Length: 330
Ligand SMILES: [Zn+2]
Image 1 (cartoon, rainbow, N blue to C red):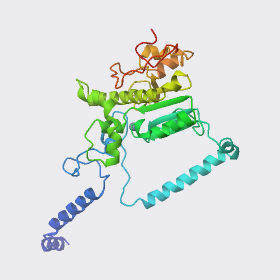
Image 2: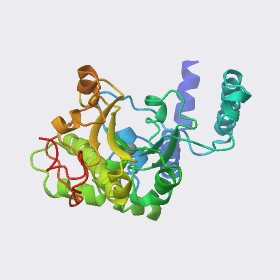
Image 3: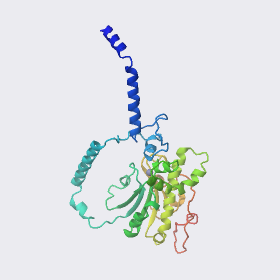
Image 4: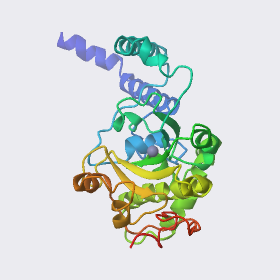
């Protein structure tokens, strides 16, 4: 037996070389054909060095979130089939607990109370703060919870459906903000176009990083962006705000517990452009709330807010005018 084995190895001496050559070839093909080959090491990183939104979510080290392996993109037919089956099953289960009368209440006309502009991130949904968003929340979603790239949809909620509340909701660990604060030239043109719209709120941070860590800058970017989007909305719907037919809220969903009030806590940071903590907690909108609610849900995470737009004009007829942040309350 030993002699046979020895003979065999001597006979096929080139085998190891062939094996390693095939292994290298297979590895190279696997890396180059899959956009989700992760995590890319410095030696196997694809030619495009710009981090994609997907990679940002999975490669950015965090203390709290677990990284997950992205799905294999070679042939997702079987996976998609299973997903579709789960959708059908989920719908069946929902209909069992929500029979016809549930839908008949609103099937002819929607009457939402909230227009919500939020990030498309899969970790953030309306169900974080509303048990049943159907017919209650008119939602507009895009990367980075932006106004300018979705103005028509927001107009539809505010001007056509006339919701009394417009909420701009950002979230901590936002991949869009991270992408916009780093080189993204390698992204497809439509993604570049949307990220470009985030440049205005992030520009002051990028030009004055100071001694802040990249993670602190990232969180500040989320906060600045929410303020910026609220300012755009406050300008556009100034007439409705002054008539007290609309209130605009800036909210951050702290999915990463950056502020220490719990994972997934929603934090109010802006009312119609008002960003000072004391003024927020004394605002007429929340004056009846308990101190505990105010403590956990009304918070101004950073004081280094840099307005990107000039304040809106003050009107003498408005007693609680919150459109001019530095002239109201106190
Ligand atoms: Zn996001």
